[in-house]
Length: 449
Ligand code: PLP
Image (cartoon, rainbow, N blue to C red; front, side, top):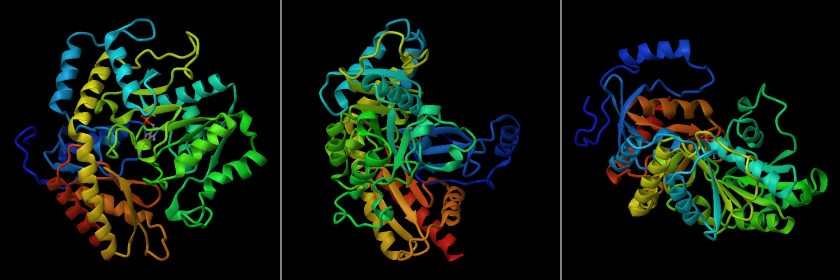
């Protein structure tokens, strides 16, 4: 194995997968680790650098998932590693709940600056995406003194009770955990490839937004009792679904009409992934609260929600977190944001466009690619039986994901029948070509059979 050796750009699979060492770990994993995880293939990873991963048996993989859209700056970027090392030698923890420290304030100031809207914002730090959504939900109720909330079918907001109540992605995530938070209503999202109303954009005039006002507000919940609408700007776990350009403007107008907060969940789409710092910037809309996590600190645990100062008006003791925004994660985030601003966001746009163009050409060659969509390096490829029937093919999708793994490409599925590309933002054109080649070969093998 030569991790950190000069980049040799090709995957190398030297053993049967999983290899001998991996098999040993998988056996113990089965014995000791919670069975609630859903791993798609037996990748037992030991080391990473940039877009490359090495497993415990020395097999080398091209990573087009980045630890589920987390390692924005690639694995172990030297500047992030240095920031972590430096801070670890100085102060690991003290807790923002009871003490002050400069790293938290520094990062909060930066987040207030880079999230869309006026700089006059406040930040709450936590450790994960679900905590960010959970806290934002609490804040929305506290601030508005209203209890209903609206979220979207296909959305994923996390797995703690509040966030889980908002999640509308897969039934297995909720099965057996009820009763959840009451007063959460799910509406169809702007999924134009599979419109819930069988309408066509733009002729539909975004009926999916009108539905909220015309149906939900008239029959199920009065808008004056709705605290917030929660939305991902691009649905992640739901299938990398991009609403049309004017969708969020209409959602924003609806929120403004009834004094409802718009809470934008940028956990997966934020931090440069879509070729802009935040995906909602593609829609020219500002949120009242932004939820962030995943890519923010290149893999160090960190989450946050950021709101207008006037909205974060709760009193001392109302909300807190022992670990949230620890100094090391804050410094890893500062290094991450610096790297994003110094070229990685542009790279995400450039390589993302290159991948999209090539995947769209692939869709012209193969009837089983129903849709190619995305922005920057958040790309979904929806597989179907054929382009006319659009029949989902979840088994074949899973088989493609597995085949890619066997050939040294790490990807994951999302939604019922979609494959996601979410590589680290340091990905090169050469690496993109390798991924495209392996992906096409895998598609051909699966669909031929
Ligand atoms: N929100 C979105 C949009 C996500 O994609 C996720 C995780 O995939 C979450 C929230 C939950 O984040 P975490 O797993 O860090 O709790």
